[in-house]
Length: 411
Ligand code: NI
Image 1 (cartoon, rainbow, N blue to C red):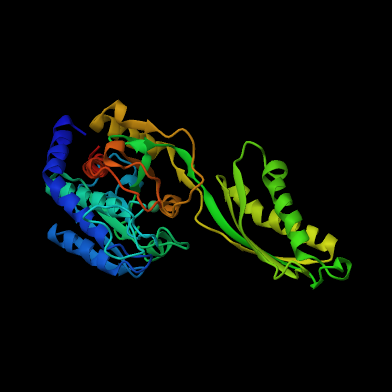
Image 2 (image 1 turned 90 degrees about the horizontal axis):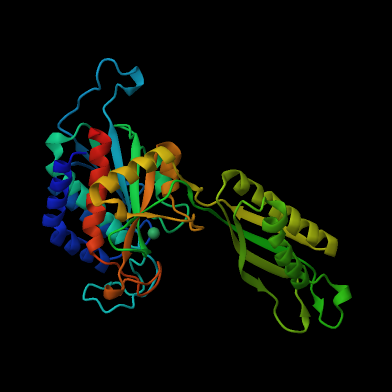
């Protein structure tokens, strides 16, 4: 990307910044939960129509896509191999859902729906993709290829919106050959973009273990099978999955977050339910965990004369940022914002993100948008009732996404 283009992108993003902030505040005031993003999706459609991009709505219920057809639809030169002989389409993705949280900020634009809040910054993500759409539609005459803007429902709640969007064909017609997305990060200072290649976010699965014993009088434990004692052993033993069953260089988290069981102090409990999460950064490791859980819970239960039932639900897959596309993103951002704008994310995160599904289909990169600014109280973590962002990030996020799409298409 030439310096001239970078200057143009920055100029446009400065011009449109007040409108983008307004849009973000509006989206923030009317947050909607997973697969209920009806008003939000209407608002997005309205913005896209203004830009004269081709709009499709109602995908996977509330999903929206916009297609900006670049003015140059030039096939690559004759001497290119045949498979290269296609017009490129790059996608930019935003998620639309909010969280069941009662907002505790004093902003005039705070949520108008008590108990629902954009506390993960998805309002910012949508605004950044709209911002990129605004920038790129002004540069349409220069674009050698197409840009697809993807707004998906439900990132927060498994099974999520990405999978049904892909099943509905959002990566096809025209075929998407790369995808980029970003997520607000309250731990990264404003002005910086977090980058990391390889495994970046975890596969996060859910499990319930139901231990069936036999009830009885608390004074006669030998007449029953105490499900609580079995549960205690199972909880302890689950930790040996990470410490003894999986290589120590592979991160694994097995956490039981909820225990249900028992009715009174003098009654031997006949049933305990353990509810937990299992996370890892490697697909092969993730595939081993359900079997290990069943072996451990089943074996311990059997030795006590109880039985264990394991219900295991696989969550979003490991998010792996391909090195090539991530390197491309790093270089492009460095050219646009300077070397200091790159924040090398030192470690992967054990949180999950359904952007992983897109990356299973096409190359791309999931980036972090620095939103931290103590002066603006933008210090709270995701999903906190006081979560907020430094809105300067909107301008940065919009130009970065626009710059990535532009450079991907035009070189
Ligand atoms: Ni989020």
